[in-house]
Length: 133
Image (cartoon, rainbow, N blue to C red; front, side):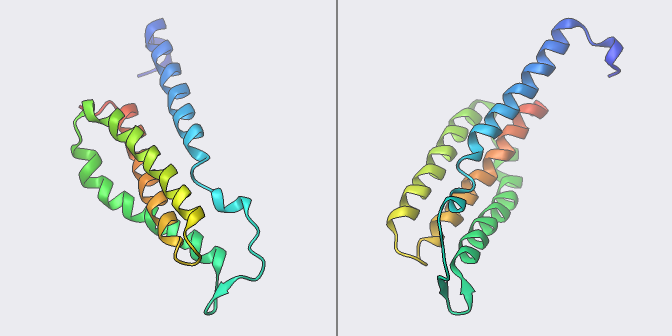
């Protein structure tokens, strides 16, 4: 739709969607990179650095979330999106708490879980923006 044909309510809705999507994603970002706040020194397991293990675990979670989301998020009724959104954020936070109390390198599973939850959050945000029914 060309910009000239947008009326004021359409423009207001567009601006609101941009602000809401940015806000949701911005607020969620704090749950994404908690491992950047820590010092790792020379910690490694086998020949793999500990930080590499953590980053890889989280990226694998994100990757798997994209494939799961193709089915789960795409078929989710709109009325369930907000509940799932909140549940996935809580799950991501719980994963970070468990990361803190589980001994290394076994705690990497919790960053995998964190990535899985957060990867699906992005799909939910897009579902709202695209107006999926």
